[in-house]
Image 1 (cartoon, rainbow, N blue to C red):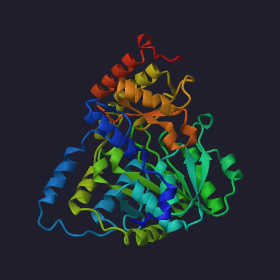
Image 2 (cartoon, helix red, strand yellow):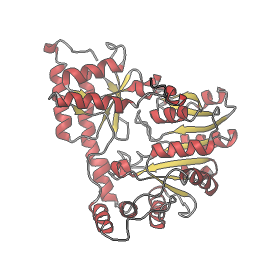
Image 3 (cartoon, rainbow, N blue to C red):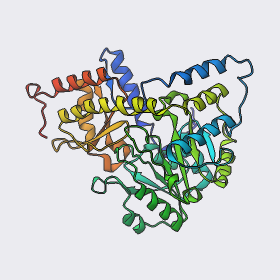
Length: 398
């Protein structure tokens, strides 16, 4: 009899929602259901042409296939510094204040390993990206949730934060522009976060992959004077440069924090494929016209269709949202969002994300991804319209 058991830490988490649901969607598609997925934020457009050309050209070099430094090649770090200087007005030393990553999940892991001992606390937003919670649990951290609510425009309530027991809190996760709620970044919030971090000796980590999507004003936590002393910011090419499968991201902070994080990372992985790093450096040169089309115009058209889907479902939403999702409150006829999203999946063959996966404050919300062609969004709208029409007996009051 096999008595091998998994590590105790696995009892603290479940398989990622989209991993589980992806298997169900694959099964339904295999049965001929042809599910339209409007669930995941994976851009469906290609990177810029020079980016792809650089990757192909550099990959043909016979000397391009060796191990690379964990700290990233200088060309990529310099391009990342140039990106922050150009778009955010933030000066970063490419040699000591930038660490390339393969994505935010890796960054969450490495930062937590570098700053938090088992049993110490981390502040996690509710609602928020599920990996802030799951990775913290896997590493033995104690989760302290802080509330984001529509009454406060989904910004942190600093009065509530001050009332929490902050003893032994080492990290605070934030994410502005916000996912899943679409709340815009605000310099006033960033200023309060830096002040909060300084006074309580807590490292604030702002996850900032959405500042170009439906955003004409590009904001960074590091624009606040002194932020580098106590804060870390993640950024990503997945969303803003249409490169989710490339796995290129970064974090920026002070040189000391970078050295601690590199100590962790260098013991876990090696550097990314050199041609990929050079192509990413090229992508950072994308001009204003490219961003205006890829990150504003395309998503604006898709947002209109997503809004019509929300209307058809009787959901309400804030039209001022930014980012690549639309977050809507479900109608009173449903007990929770999952009841509605499951109905949509099985009756209209459209996959939407129920807000409960982001925390209890998302229970009465659902999220629509804008990472689908207008034709697919239009088809999804028509399917939902037919399935939820009064003649189908499934209409809900707005």
